[in-house]
Amino acid sequence: MAGPSTALSPVIAASTHWLARAYPGGESNTVAHTLSELQARQAVTVAAWLRYPTEIDAALVAIAGPGGSAVLDWKAGSEPEDEFAEGEGWRTWVDEVVVSWAACLLADPMLARRGVDAVIAAVPIPEPRPRPHTRRTSGLPSEFRRLLQPDARDREAATLLRHPDLLEPIAAMHRDTLLYLLDAEQSREPLAA
Image 1 (cartoon, rainbow, N blue to C red):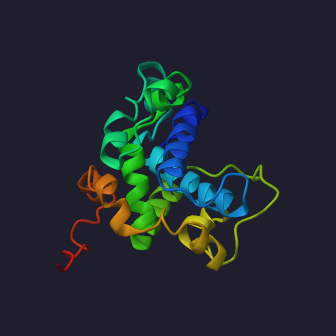
Image 2 (cartoon, rainbow, N blue to C red):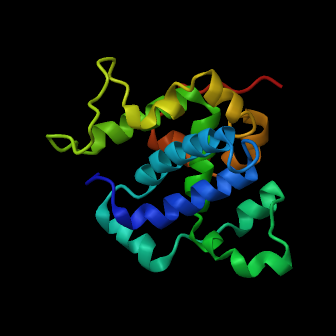
């Protein structure tokens, strides 16, 4: 993994927007909505970096396009109305696999930890860090704190976004591939009915 590419920005933005609209965290322009969207963005960022690990992968998806949100819209029941479809061009930049993987990460804290660990292990961190904040001494990357250790406000804001039953139709679409990628297949136990 060569590191994050700016070519993924449209995919990350559109996929985050899709998750935030499909599983809203409150009225727009509220703190709850913002906190929910931040958690979605962190999960989508990890998923996108796992899905497109090299700059070449990111450039190819920028050229070919990620596929759009049609299947996700159908599964989540969030298809846009025909009269509003003209303003929904951002949906073409939604990546179905990235959204599915992000849903898996949001619903399963252990899988989220594995995903972030894989990204941290593969993405070189330039020294000195361009950000004003250094890593915490606990080793938890501050970039993904809301995904890995949401506080009470984060959990309350993202009740729908982190609900495993609500995320299941989306997460199940590509969960097996993510489990294989993160070598988490054996550590998973079947859910009791």
